[in-house]
Length: 250
Length: 244
Image (cartoon, each protein chain N blue to C red):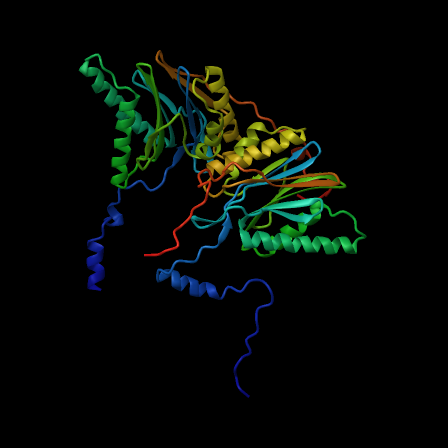
């Protein structure tokens, strides 16, 4: 009988085998490839009728803007939306996963409206399981039978329940706006304007955020996804008649 | 073996044994925020001196008048700030001894500080401060900043440390030419309040200083009003008892 041991793959979780190779390569001077991050400004606030979420639309790969108009506000349930900052693949994957889990749960439980705390618990237990390696920092907001809710979820799995929240590289610029102007009982117009101001503060003061402002307003029984609600960075100079290049070459 | 030893002897930085370089700060002050207004410059700083993560000193004056025309605010290592004040004392004294009717204005003091900071940085022994220099001379308002590596610039509003991230977005939005004194103080207090909420080394005891053609006034220490009455703070787990 041959003594060759059968290679059994590890049971679930991440396999860190390539880390030794990466270490060796970086010691030899080979740079790690950068991955697409949503260096971002995402915000949420609770107003008198519900929750408003906002996000910028720039996705970066290191110093390069790889997507000028990406969508950072993800659908979770008809009454729950989630903004994502961090590694774009991680935020997409984790929100889509919890989205399907919520839908299956609705099927299992007689079609009742999903609760925000359900999405919160699913997200935080997944992120905690991966000990911070899934780099998704989320602002989760929605309105369910128990009222409006707004939560922040950090990559290691901790959560906060807040009246107003900001995440991402532009979070300090946006938080400065919220801390100075937020108060309870905002109307819909005031809330949208404040969210817009906070995202614009991130767009213009943080290099990782830019382009346009997306807004999502969630109230009891109704939601409005305002894609590109505000576009403060238009392309200013372009030739109105286009260009005509001569066909003959040389 | 030989090449290793040779490399050690020719090392650019010198052996660690006789190292005389500043490695890290000990007692630090947090942000300073300043802006130009109609009659001159307004500058604000809290009075905290942190020793690592301990709030050790709560009456550190980080805003000081320099000569007749300037006001200096500093964040970073407090002992280095005191050393800089001694250098400036000597500078102003020598200037006074000339007795020629001229006196150093804010531009000159800023230039002097930039040279001092940059020179120390080149010797790998920085004065671990971010300095804000404001003043008025002959009707000309001046507000500038020098960092510990010698980066210096002049602007209508400046901030150091955390103030760069939290206060400057607000200042960029709401500052305009010819702010009145009351509006300037309100704007500075708004920035200091945000810093108080969101900077862990900030304390609620601050001074605001004003410098105009007439001279420098540094206010006595006072505290800002804060608001903590949000319903989500009082009852964060509504709808999910036992969660957090």
